Length: 157
Image (cartoon, rainbow, N blue to C red; front, top):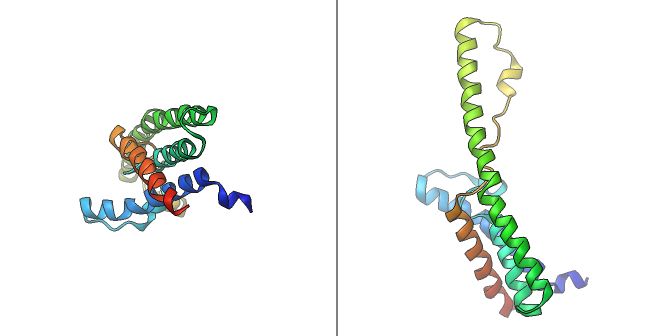
């Protein structure tokens, strides 16, 4: 039951939940689209990965002190995660956009030339995930969200 006393862990988990849930009203405000599924998807504003590692590092800094080895480890871990969220994963998402468009274009070509492809399997096929990574601004605000969550939760802990 000591896991319930681990403030950095709970700060990180709270930051993930908050960042994922806040995506729904933010998307609604910007686009007028209500998409509750955003709470369970990757990508979007703010980055929950960034919020989690920033809250974790902030929590470790609060509990262990910013001069501790654990704080140093968590900060390096956070930087790597945030860099990956805005780099490699974002590029994979952009490639998915192009691949999905190519697939749709090919499907249109096939449909216009033949009738045989109207099978149930074609209707079930799902698009590649396009919303994998984050814009740098999403990572930045994810990080700020994590730091804020940790500082807000610590007095309650």
